[in-house]
Image 1 (cartoon, rainbow, N blue to C red):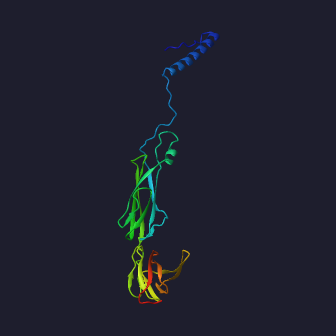
Image 2 (cartoon, helix red, strand yellow):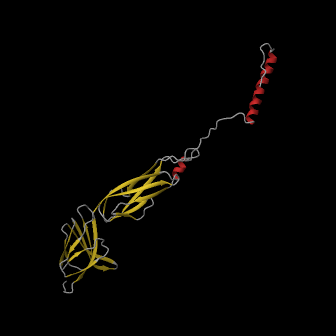
Image 3 (cartoon, one colour):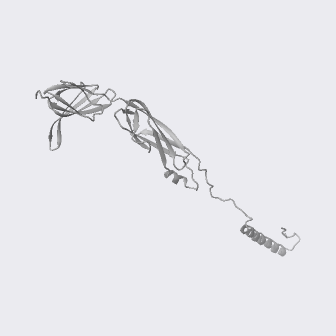
Length: 259
């Protein structure tokens, strides 16, 4: 396209008129070509980001942050996952997607331990043996299924004391679980002795009044107790490693008499 430009030899009036005509013509031309699609501009909005970005991390700790436990103790373990690069497809949506992120968890328990569940971010572990127990959890970002992270936590499990109670007429080994109380016949007064601990707490129920138990109790480091009453008893023994075990039973009068 050819545009007519004013010549230097023209009169001042004609040059002014031709300059004004040229400005008007260019303005009309630019507007026409923009409407016709000949003029393009670069968009200012952000372009979508990749949906495959993954920086998932998972931390695992016992709920009480204690990495030591006793073999007769239940331990709650908590996992927490966070993806620092959850993708966003529109500007400003990143923080909202982080807040709405959801994760799945799969746990693996070692030999000598079990879990109440093998999914979810919080589980409860129980133990059948002592030693170092390593629990592993794998977290998956449900918004990005290919994004996973695995972490392991180790818990040192100490054995709880195995209580043996020596009664005057017999030798009674109290069940380890303490869930099956034993019934033992004795004469009164008498002496009993417990072993396998460094601290012993003995309580015997001597009466019940209005639904309340009246107990006679004693604590010592020898495990030897003078028994002057029959009835339900509770014995708690603390081992050298600090682990405790509580057992229950019932003392009854021997047919031979006493008391």
